[in-house]
Image (tube, rainbow, N blue to C red):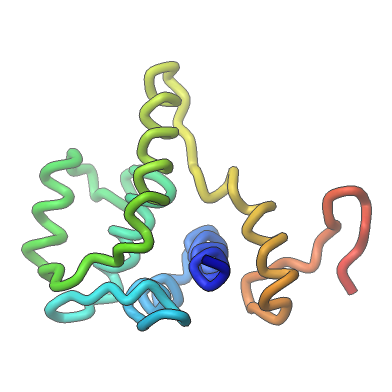
Length: 145
């Protein structure tokens, strides 16, 4: 849906900006402003780490050096999920699959970086004042004023 695309575009740019509060807000806010995820304590650090892990990368700054199972278990122990953000599930699955294929070729892929241009394109059309939207050159040479 258009609202999910807009929220996911914001999530992508917030992850790239390292904006933990904004990532948590997008994950936890009810649709159409967010994905409607809920956890017991609404811990912004846990929301940020999980959203970044599922939608971008599994680097040490995110996973704290834990393997997949240990990381998910640690996040669940710190702030148990009450309601998973269901509109993120298939998007996160694509991110994980792409990273898995890249890992097979010894490539460490950061998905949000690859999707930045598309996220910016969506937000230029739907929310041009979004704070993490850059004012750089558009594809094809056009300029954003």
